[in-house]
Every structure is written in C-alpha cells, then in structure tokens.
Image (tube, rainbow, N blue to C red; front, side, top):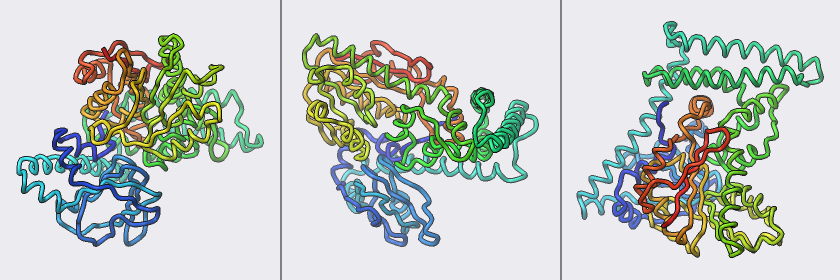
Amino acid sequence: MRTRTPFPSLTLLGALMPADVDRLLGVSREQQVISGHLAVRAGGAPSAMFIVLEGLMEVVSPRTREVLATLGPGEIFGEMGYVQQQPASADVRARENSLLLVIGTAELDALSVEDPPLGMRVHRALAATLAARLRVSNERLDRALALRPDTGTPDDFDAVTRLFAHITDMKTELVAVDRAALKADGIVAEATATVVREAFTSLVHEMNAVVADLDDELQRSRVGARLQAELLPYVLLSDLGERMYAKPRGYAGDYLTIAQLYADVPSGSGRLGPLLDRCLRDQSAAAAVRNRRPLLAEEIGRAIAGRAGQLTRVTSLACGPAQELFDVFASFDDPSTLQATCLDIDAEALAYVRARLDDRLAPCVRLEQANLVYLALGRTSLELPPQHLMYSIGLIDYFNDRFVVNLLNFIHGCLAPGGQVILGNFHPSNPARAMMDEVLDWPLIHRSEDDMHRLCAQSAFGQPCDRIRFDPSGVNLFAIASRR
C-alpha cells in the first residue's frame, strides 16, 4: 500500500530539528482571514508561506473561478512561489473565518543569511515538502492516464482482471436491485439487501488484497484510478461516503463524520443510497470507529475507579464529538468527580460539544481551542492541572512518527505520576485500506504494535507501551502507557 503525506506542512516542520522549528516560528506571525477574503491573489509577488492553523481555505482558479483544492488545518501554501520566486498562479481565499501562520519570505531570507546552516536545512525541508506534493501530482497524473482507453489494466494480471469482473457483476446486480425497488415503492427487500451487503464486503476485501499485492507503483496507481472511476459514483449515493470523499471540513474524519458513524443510521440518495450507506457502515473500518466509543468509556471508567472517589482529570486531544465522555457522564448520579478537558483545533467541533452540555455537565467540561502541532513542538502552552488520563483517537493516523513522539512528550509533561496516555491508530491489517486510499481519497498512516512500542520508547515515557488493546474488529489499536 503506498504512503501519502496527509499534511504537507508536517513534511516541512517534521524535517527540521525542534530548535530550527522554534527559530522559524519566531520570525512568523498569525493572520486572521475573514470568510470570502483573499490571503493570496493570483499574479501577486511571493511574500510569504502560509500554514493553515484553523478554518478552511480554498485554492481558486483566477480564470474559471473553479475551486481547485480545499486546505484544512495543517496544510501549507505559498511555498512554491517562495522557491521559484514567481507570482502566485491562483487565488487562495477563506471558505470560513480562518487563522494562518505567516512565514515572511524576507524574514526567512534574513534568517538564512544570519545562519546559513539553518537556511540549508529549511531549504532541504522545503524540497521534501515539494517532493511530497510532486508525488501526489504524479499519482493524479497516473490516475488520469489510467482512465485513457489505451492504458487499461493488463490482461496478464489475473487477480486484477477478476477483481474488475466482480465489480462489473456488482454493478449489474445493483441495476437489478434498483429496478426491483422501483416496482416496490422504492423499498429494497431485506433478503436482497443482505446479499448485496455481503457481496460488497467481499469486494472490499478482495480489492484490499489485490492492491496490496501490486509491487509496481505505477500499476498500483492505475488500478487505484480504475477502482475509483468504477466505484465512486455508487459510493457517492451514500451520505456517509459523500461526506468522507468531499471532506467539507478539509479532512475525512471530521467531527460530524464521526458523529454520523456513531449514530449508525444509514441514509443516502435515491433507492440505492441507503443500502450503499449501510454497505459502507458494515466495513470493519467503520465498525472500528464505532467501537472506539465503548472502549474509551471503559478506560475512562477504569481511571475513575482507580481514583477511589477522588477527582479524576481527563483530557481528550482532538476531541471531535466527544461522545465517549457523554456516555461516561450519563452513568453518574454526580458528575462532579470527573473533570474533562476537550481540546480541538476546529471551533465547530467545540461548538458541537458545547451545545450538548446542560447545566449539570457544563461545570465539569472545559473546552479549549488549540493547535496540537504547536503544543507538541512547545511553541505554545496549555495550562492544565496534572491529568490522570489523556487520550487521542483518530489523530496520529494523519501524522508522521516525529510528531507522534513530540505529542507523547507533551502528554508526558501534562500527566500526574501514574497518569496514563491512550493513543489510537489504525492497524495495517485494516481490510478496508484500499477502499479508503483509492476510492475515498482518505489516506492514513497505519501502525503496528511494534511501531507503537518503538514510538513510546523514543518519547519521554522512555519504554515500550504498558499494554496495547484492540477494538473487537481488530482494526484499531490503542497504545497505553503510564508516567512513572
């Protein structure tokens, strides 16, 4: 399975030493951009590089006004103009009120003159960032070429040929199901739905096995493009699939997507939409997300029990909808024994949580909008009393190893002696990985038990994890470590 870089700015920051990052951030500034306003105008001289800290930005063609890309927290723009010293080729405007980190080119040049070795490291990091973008562009080009009539899947790949034959069979079956539903007031018979769901899951697993066995990067990209072209029109009939692919918050696993997965109520367009939505929810990756909720509620309950009636302090990093905390609070007659902090960079996620806090829970939950990249790098701080449990699920799958170690260091410093950290990550055994990577454009960094033990040992925790749990699907692992 190929590796992608979800957040290019982390290639830039991750390639630098912590002291370099601190100096780079020292010559930067923050800039608020109001929804609809431009941060960069096409044709303008390059004056800065930008990292999105909060909100959403859009890259817009100056000729057609088409939105070419959406940039969420952690993504970078303006670096190409700095390297090439050429005017901007597109407008970049705020889709919603946004906060940017602005690294001025004049300040960066002055820093390079003052400290040439630092300048070399910054330019090397920029080269890594641009290389990551080039790889993504090459993948897109390969995908476009794969859809041309003369660049189809070679006949000698028997497994690939069988896979696409099975996809054709599935599409033919869906046409028949839709016709039958049309004659039955739009209702798909339960027995028929069961057959389709089982066939869809079998296809997802076959897709995963076939793509994983393709060693040639170009061929894998071409097969991925064909898979997306064949399946995406059907997946987009599902409300969940449409949201995962469209990424209205700039990334696939936003708080409302997670809330939809937790609710587990299928919906979609037309007669097939709800059925296809259920097919997506049947996949073990979706089940793994749902399983996070009771697993974390259990671990929070264990931390509370260990405090024997004393106040327990818990922090959720990149909290999303924070449903597991509401589940725990619902089990209490008196919620005041738990003090929870919910931290997220997305103001809408925090507003979603705030709207659910009644008078009983409001004093027990603290909401903090903060940038975890800054916190992990030590650029900003968060005043927290010593915590007994800190956890993050659905976050580190998007970040490189260096960030994970920095995050663990930050967490270690926030924990009380004996306090625990729980970090969730998708496991390489995920049978829906190809569906996520190739069809939904939802790349994640999958990590094994050995990976998590290694990262924990490299951090301030100084040793492998205490234990690793898996959700019932076996797709999400949860690395647990204690501050000694």
